[in-house]
Every structure is written in C-alpha cells, then in structure tokens.
Amino acid sequence: MAEPSSAALDALRAQIDEVDQEMLALLQRRLKLVGEVGTIKHREGVPIYAPKREASMLAKRRAEAEAMGVPPQLIEDLLRRIMRESYVSEKDVGFKRVHDTLGPIVIVGGGGKLGGLFAQLFTLSGYEVRVLEQNDWDRADALLADAGMVVISVPIDKTCEVIERLPPLPEECLLVDLTSIKQAPLAAMLKAHPGPVLGLHPMFGPDVSSLAKQVVVVCHGRGEEHYQWLLKQIAIWGARLHEAPASEHDQAMQLVQAMRHFTAFVYGLHLKREHADIEQLLQFSSPIYRLELAMVGRLFAQSPSLYADIIFAQPDALARARHYLDRYQEALALLEAGDKVGFEALFDDVAQWFGDFAQQFRVESANMLMAANDSRSG
Ligand SMILES: NC(=O)c1ccc[n+]([C@@H]2O[C@H](COP(=O)([O-])OP(=O)(O)OC[C@H]3O[C@@H](n4cnc5c(N)ncnc54)[C@H](O)[C@@H]3O)[C@@H](O)[C@H]2O)c1
Ligand SMILES: O=C(O)C(=O)C[C@]1(C(=O)O)C=C[C@@H](O)C=C1
Image (tube, rainbow, N blue to C red; front, side, top):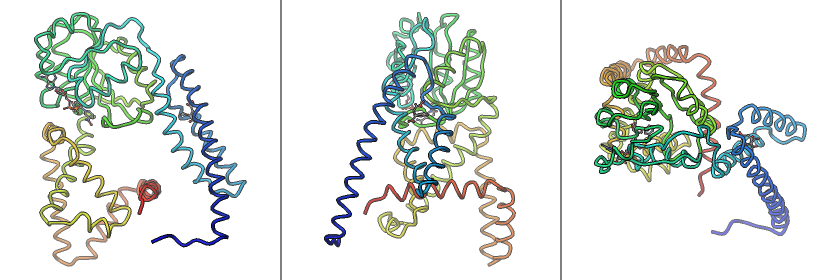
C-alpha cells in the first residue's frame, strides 16, 4: 500500500531531500580528508584509532549540539558511525612497516580465516608473507629457512602437534601463536624453539572490517625485546593490547568464551527441540530478543569445530558447565515451589553483586538496542 502523502508533506520532503544531499556532500568531503589523514598516518606510523582525539572531538560536538538545540546523542551516534568508516578507509591505505629488516613471515594455517586476516594485515604493512598449509610440509624447510617470524594459526586441537612438527627455526626467528587458549601452545612453543616466543589471542573473529578498538591479549613468552616491534605494529593497526599471564587468560576464557558458547549452543538446541518457529518468533520479538536470537543464531553460521575446540580445549570447562547446571536447578527449584519471594531475594542478591555495572550495562545495552532497531527495515 502506498504511504499517505499531501502537497504540504511533499514540499517539506523535498527540502529534507535537499538537506540529506547536503549531508552527503559533506560526508564525501569528510571521507576525502580522512583519506589524506590515512596517508599521513601510513607514512608516519600513527595508529588508525586515536581515542583521545575522538573523546575530545565528541565532547566538543556534543556541547555545540546542545547549544544548537540538537540532541547531543544524535551527533555522537552519527560521528561514531562515520568514524567506523574512517577506520576502514585508513586501513585500505596500508600501514607503516615497523620492522624494516625482518625476514619473511610464515603463517602456518595462513589459508584459514584468522591466519588469512593476519596475512592481509602483514601484507598491507609491507612484509613478505608466506603461507604454510596442511599439504606444504614437504617444503617446510625451504619455507622456514630464512623466516623472521612464524605465526601459528591452525585449529586449536592441532596447535601443539604442529608446533612440535616445526623444523629448527633460525635462532633469531620470533615464534608466535594466535590460538584461543594460551597455556598449552605457549608451553609447546617455549619447548620447541629456544629463541623469542610470544602468545597472542586476538579477541575478535575474521569478519572485522578493521582492528580499530579490538583487543589482542598478549601473553609474554621469551625475549620481549625481540617482539616489541610486533606489539607496536598491532597498535598501529588500531588494536588495544591487554597483557595477561596465560593462566589468567585461560581462566577468563572459560567464562568469556567456553561457557558463553556452551550456553548459546544449549539455547539453540532447546529452540530446535521445542520446534520453535523462528519466523514466528521474529514477528513477536522485542529488539532485545531479536538481538539475543541473533547472537545465538550467528553461532550456528560458523564452524562447529572452532566452537567444539574452544569448549573442549578448556580443562575446567566441564566443571564450569556442571556448576551452571547446579545454578539452573537451584533457580528451577524456586520455580517448581512457586517461591516468588525466594526468586526475588536471589535476584536482589545477584543485582547487588553486579553493583554499578548493572546500571552501566543498562545504558550501554539501551544504545545497542536502539542501533539494532535502527538497522531493521519493514
Ligand atoms: N576464527 C576466529 O574467530 C578466531 C578468533 C581468535 C582466535 N582464533 C584462533 O585462530 C586459529 C585458527 O582459527 P581459524 O578460525 O582461522 O580456523 P580455520 O579452520 O579457518 O583455519 C585453520 C587453518 O589451518 C590449516 N591447517 C590445519 N592443519 C594444519 C597443519 N597440520 N599444518 C598447516 N596448516 C594446517 C587449515 O587448512 C586452515 O587453513 C585457532 O587457533 C583459533 O583458536 C580464531
Ligand atoms: O583524527 C584522526 O586521527 C583520524 O584518523 C580521523 C578520525 C575521524 O574520522 O575523525 C578517525 C579515526 C580516529 O580514531 C580519530 C578521528
């Protein structure tokens, strides 16, 4: 059905079209300026993400918006979205190469998703990148003979055996892994190679458009002075580095990844077994439920082995899952007993434990939900 219209409405809509076209021209001008910034950053090795500049710019624009009677959050939302575009366009210009004399970088598993992303980033930064894939082991000696750095990016359950399979590397060669767990790969690398060793865990998937604002966990291995350049290189790509001992990383990952993926998996399984009709659920869904469904559904668009590996590779994941079941049963018992008062008391107890974070998460999620709702059409 055609949307209602009138002459008065049409006249105003024509003016709105003009304003939008002006915005388009302004965006074009801004993108061009950002392109020039990208060229300078590439030349001078300045990180693409400039948090202080962003914070001061947003604060000024918010104040100006307020003075003009424009909602400050509107300009902040627009600018944040526009800056996301800046990260991508600045990335495409390429990055300064921090280590001028490094030998070739060999990415073991470089034909895969994450290895492929890092191959692209190192290539954009001017390094020679070689890929060592499953069928390349007969020429591994030749590929690795003059390597300046070897990056391991193979499935988690293959990582240690692949590290053990490496021939002796050049003494100065840096050995790095990108595995989602850190203790076992780091120990295997330290054993296999007497030279510099570093454990990294990129806390993002291969579908990110740029590394701006993404986190890379750094677990030190050996010979820190030999890999400062790499940490600087990753910072130039825009990522934030978070240093942590491998054991602390693996503990945190049990909740951040293993348990989260496990509970999302169980929720997906439950929907299937309950014969839920996804089309119908979407018709009834609030923005938050749609977001939740999207978070669960996206798991099943990815490789089962990646998630199985993350969950099964965590030594304590089973104990965590059992604890979770205990808590589910504890809450279920309240439901079975019709104990609403007990439920509310438990709710309060958890709310107090969340403390100020509860309010912070409420504000954060409200913005996310509005953005998710904006992206809907129809
Ligand atoms: N994908 C992610 O979201 C993500 C995020 C963070 C960390 N990681 C880590 O990155 C690593 C790779 O994950 P991915 O998602 O890129 O997996 P992937 O399956 O896409 O890639 C793995 C690659 O390793 C290759 N490979 C397998 N066995 C090999 C062998 N013996 N020798 C050489 N190559 C071999 C495969 O052919 C494939 O190309 C894993 O350790 C994972 O924990 C992945
Ligand atoms: O000013 C910069 O350094 C830019 O790269 C430009 C810009 C922007 O689009 O305004 C983009 C990314 C930075 O994080 C900050 C600002």
